[in-house]
Image (tube, rainbow, N blue to C red; front, side):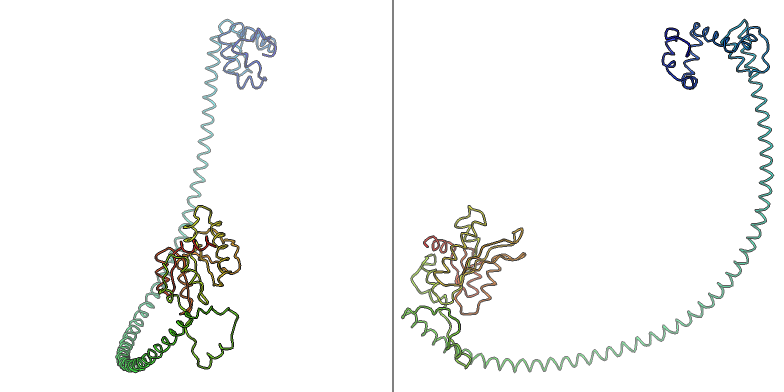
Length: 419
């Protein structure tokens, strides 16, 4: 292929011609054989090349002389390419000789394989005899071990029988002990019931004695309370008539020490004292009168007020506006002011500027602002005036039930707008 020009290479071998010689023989064998069979010119060029490379063999093939040193396949290939007279016969003879050689080789190989198998069979028989002898010795050893295990099993069974007898005896003793303990428990329970009956009788007597003592004490307390209410009512009426302003919070006064010697301090003016005034509940003047009470505590439901008055702005702006107004109101009246906001829906802790005079609280997680307001009212001592600002009916009812005065949110909003 390397000596041919591009025009001399058959079309089917164009791709093969670009291969290396080794790759042509390996990958292009089918294409080369097809070209030799179908392209006579290509075959003649190959025959010319063979005669030039193998002149002696070519001469013997052309003369139809035997080639004793050549393989039958090589002789058939030379006859196919050179095609001397009678080349078909040469090819058939070479093929028959190749078949005969293959058969002879097969017979020799079969003989060798039979000999090898016989040797392996003999070795296997020897190994089998050795294995049988070894297994017999192992079986004898296993039989000895089995006899030892049987003896051990008989010993264990004897021990188990002895343990069963012993456990039966222990169970009988345990049942007797349990029966005795049950009888003792029943006796103790009966004694306990008798003692509990006597204790119940003693407690009944003690309760009767306590009840009698408490009834006598309550009667004395009712009489004393009636007297105190009479004195306090007179004092409050005198204060309202004289229009005395409340004392400023200046700390402890000398008269405060008299209470430790047995003197009773009268109740301060309460929120309910203003109920008789001719003021409507939604009148801002009512809130002014309430804030004039001494030591009054104003508790504001923050979001209830802001959403009623200016709910269009953000929550932060609502809080700031309400707290600022409450600070001014606390500065003018001197009242204690606590503003409560609902903190259950807040994502994090709120930073709120707290002016002087106003206490700002957020309800903790799990508790509403209404519950915190109720706790603030209940924490105040009985008799202190407490005003709760909220339009929520439940908050107002809870405030009244705790002794505080409820004021609608609109009243506080009008009061702040007026200021």
